[in-house]
Length: 221
Image (tube, rainbow, N blue to C red; front, side, top):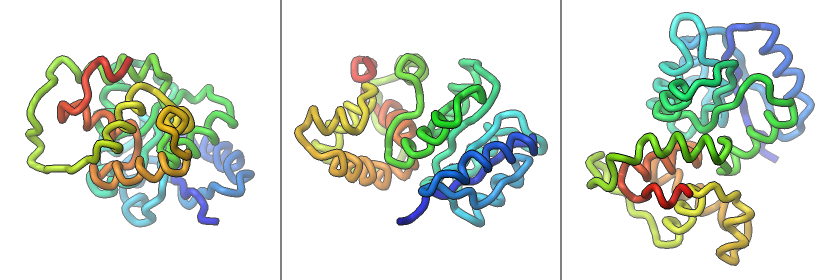
């Protein structure tokens, strides 16, 4: 079984140690590196290409927002989960626009963190639906608009249907039940969507679809 590979980026050594000890107990997840500043995080991710990065916001040299931007620019398939003490709408919006896959506070339980890692890897959302709708709505007033990214993407009707249900906050299992598909099939479709859109998570795919005008505010309800 291929393990989910993770890099921890946080300037508090004690927190990194605690997170490592927690995740080391999981047979399907492996910590392959840890760093204490944003610049090192970018360099390590470019070298190791992990599936997931656990990223703090306040770090030396460059902060988590800029580090996330740089990581997503060079390693789009790597998903970045923000793990921070800052519960601030401005940070959430900035980090999701930078390419973060999810946003968690450091008071989450160990079980919630492990579930979040597995969920992002499986194409699930790691944002509370209320927060997700509020954040995605931030980008909605300017749509619909033509796709001005300069990159054409061909999404099938089935993929668009799944993306629309994902934007509404449905889990992979709920999408599967709604469309009379298997969960594995839904996950495969999401994987195809991510590859076509050159993203690493559901959150990024939904945000890009909003910016392209493929989804509107009603799809987020």
